Image 1 (cartoon, helix red, strand yellow):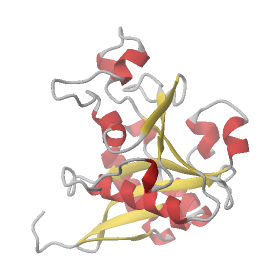
Image 2 (image 1 turned 135 degrees about the horizontal axis):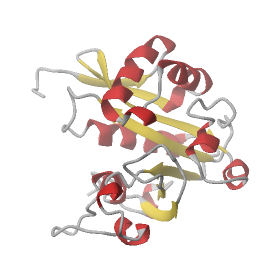
Image 3 (image 1 turned 90 degrees about the vertical axis):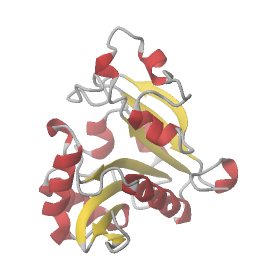
Length: 218
């Protein structure tokens, strides 16, 4: 990405739904990508949580979030289907919920490798921190290469590190290497996620900067 090309961010609008579905299709395995109808529903219910990165004015990456209540979070199994109402946020989003839930991030091929996903998540974190009533910032991320080590216990895999000391799984490292804490691991979180063997990893970012080091803090 050269200095002559412009990257900006803004809130999604309903007309972005088709473009966001294309970004998801480039970013996620086919069973996990959200379609245009799901994106329209998310934008309708919580436009503040649907943040797009524009590359020369065209949608190129997106991060999605919602607000849920602690009571809702604790009321049933930790599954993607329940916590996001199948990715639509129709019954899961609570405009006064005390948890700001990071649901996903995707980057199209044109901006991949330039740290745009990290910038979007940092923007989401700052937004969650700024919202009255938010007490926790949680996300459920993917142990995306666990299918390469199916013989290894999941708890061992989550903590597997490479020679540099970083977590071997790049998706886990994306969050856990940038200020998030590891809370718990959940079997059956998303059964159609074959790469992760259905597992989800609950992570939490500090709701105030004083609680931990965030990316780019000196």
